[in-house]
Amino acid sequence: MSRRCELTGVGPMVGHNVSHSNIKTKRRFMPNLVAIKVQSDALGQTFSLRMTNAALRTLDFKGGLDAVLLKAKDEVLSARALKIKRQVKAKLAETAAA
Image 1 (cartoon, helix red, strand yellow):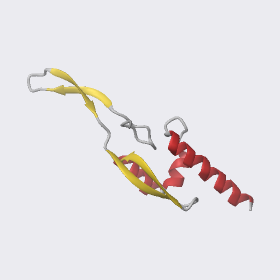
Image 2 (cartoon, helix red, strand yellow):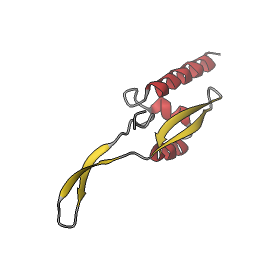
Image 3 (tube, helix red, strand yellow):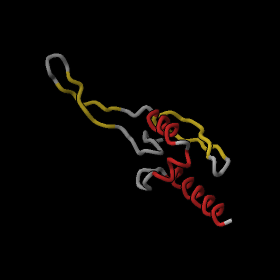
Image 4 (cartoon, one colour):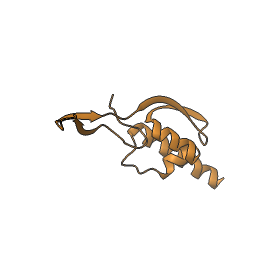
């Protein structure tokens, strides 16, 4: 399982531990991932996704999973999130046509 947020694409970053004597050693900054179930309003389903806490706060701020997925670029989304995005788009287009 990769250490990557399914909504924002945030992954591990590389940096240095810097000691008091200014010796630098490599380290990795891991994203704060949580496995959470989120509800899609358009589809009426819950989906299990691994996302960062920052993405979770963005989800609350922007008004839910559907709003965030529709605004997100396809390049940063995981395969599972992309599938959900396509389903949401199809459902909204079907609703608008009716």
